[in-house]
Length: 410
Ligand SMILES: Nc1ncnc2c1ncn2[C@@H]1O[C@H](COP(=O)(O)OP(=O)(O)OP(=O)(O)O)[C@@H](O)[C@H]1O
Ligand SMILES: [Mg+2]
Image (cartoon, rainbow, N blue to C red):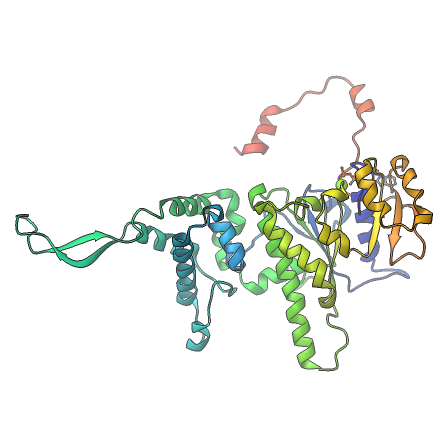
């Protein structure tokens, strides 16, 4: 779904999902599963009964990151320092083994990608120890040294002082309160199963068709890794669920009887048409879903202001398009390519589309058509602000102190 700011994307997303989770009437869909990545805190009002996760109750375990994500998050990957990487890898595996209670055979199989608990503080302790390590090479103090003559003389270990940057980086991450949802105490105690239940909307006693993951409080530097981890877990869930179903019944035709729709608002923030390393993790996870998710019952809905800013891999895998008001000729060009030549003139109308007006193209519609999307009730919190009316009112006082408090805390 593409369209300029204010063209009605968020309202249309909300409207479509509201229909997709209706539990009454002719269109009742009881087994629908939608997970929305909500970057601007917009969707809660539109889905008051949803499974709502935000920075206050989001708990994600860092130990579920795969090897590549772990390195991206904890190491200074630009420096490409193999000492750092080896120390990190050894420490993670050692801590996983120490926490593991299963058989020795399984213990020996643990590696950097195994989604098992390790304690990040163990890794820090290990790095600190290696950074100040003194080793005994069999040398002894010379006879001229009156106090220590004959005693073993320790020399600096091979990594002495070389891990200082790594240690500092780890310490500052572990101490960063904003990262508590990821590295804090709860991330160590939450189980794999609880994590899956919470992001899939499968509470023990409560079922949710919609899960809204409000990412507005997640610091920008960790947004990509957060989205990547959640997306990858959902994809792999689909993969292993299919394996289970096919193992139970070799004739199984339906790979996933609880298929999932993942919704990414402002998709250019996670899957941009850019090779920058800060987007790497989320790009890999989401592109994989775009390419392979169909077989496992995991599909995507992406919304963005600019098709030209979204990963082409993703754009080229989409089956259906909803194009709302678009004024930029480069962006219009993307939509034009989707249309048969005979309907190319529809593009000329796009700059003049009203709010909620959309051009539909794709598998789900026989002929590309321009439609007006119904108003969404209750709508997302993304409404236009009535400047004219507000500016005509009396001067409004602002509690700036309170705003500051919300901004940086008390
Ligand atoms: N189908 C519709 N019918 C009438 N008004 C609509 C419709 N859809 C959206 N609007 C109005 O348009 C305004 C903007 O809608 P919306 O927030 O969905 O835009 P958007 O495309 O998501 O913008 P942004 O890119 O800035 O997030 C809202 O005030 C909303 O009330
Ligand atoms: Mg929007």
